[in-house]
Length: 444
Ligand SMILES: Cc1ncc(COP(=O)(O)O)c(C=O)c1O
Ligand SMILES: [Zn+2]
Image 1 (tube, rainbow, N blue to C red):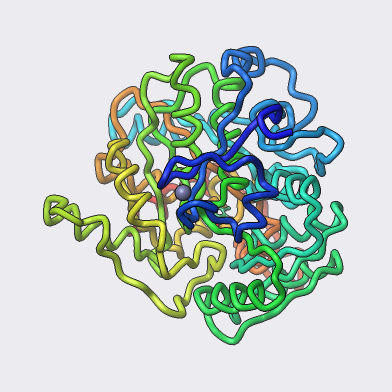
Image 2 (cartoon, protein in one colour):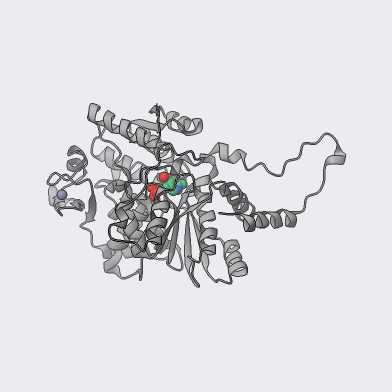
């Protein structure tokens, strides 16, 4: 049926049109003409139709599939969903007050609350539902992924629901809780002796050996389409469009997807400017932030975007962000520069304090890959990366239940007691004063 379908893929290198995902998946997820691994989904539906979907507070009862017309699936009956995608976007005034009092800066701060995602509690659920649905529509029965955690958990849940077998290659240092979350759905886990880079190599070999598709990483058009809906949600839910987007950075699918979405929306003239991307890496695995810092220091000389370090076996307590070999940097970093943004690192030890602060001020429990975004915001304030009247959107990418080990570090008010004399009334103001004092003194 070719052209009657609602979308096609367009090769990012040679521009040729690839009819559908079946063709793409059957050509090793490459352009059949030139072999490029990057292709973009294009829709035949008039983009004007999106206006109705993103009307302020338009009712979105189907989760992310509210945007079905602009997602790469032909038949609604193939949707595999856990009710993900439509999550709150809250105003976090306590961070606005901090910026005002401490830096004399007026900005608005919003939190896109993926910790509340219904399925596995991370923003990877957006990819989970789209990938599982597309694979189901294309009759795929087996799928391979290399993952530091969240993506494999999400794929495991959704692919199980779609009746598809998943083979998840995880690095040696992945936590047992991550492993359990993947395995509990009955999917196969391979714990690889080595780091994430090694897990990726083994996943590729397995995919070649068994002739089954491999999750295509950060340029995967299915994932990009899924995450682009975050941008649609900002338009639907927020009174103002963000001027700054802050996200924890591992491989960079999030910002790549926002960029794709902004381009898709260009004809509607709804967005004056793409937000400045402020991307935050853990200081224990920060190849992109380090490369960026070097390049910036040298004034971004010719070819700067092709120079980056590779870190093997990064020792970090946030394995979900542990991409030591930043293959997307040459594409991602020019985007960050064009947006007027920054790639920074943040002391990962600060995530415990940030999570306590957010829980205290907002009653929201965030995981480490989200807490590093809050730390990144404070560091960005200190470095002058946030400007007067900015509208800052924080991607709160995961809830605390994704990281039980991290959760245990929330224990900080306990006192062991034997008798009533040792028990006392507590002073909430004093707690808060101490949280801010520690924040103030922290070297992020
Ligand atoms: C909660 C959370 N935030 C951020 C990221 C990084 O995402 P990206 O692929 O856009 O770098 C991940 C996963 O890698 C994640 O799980
Ligand atoms: Zn091509």
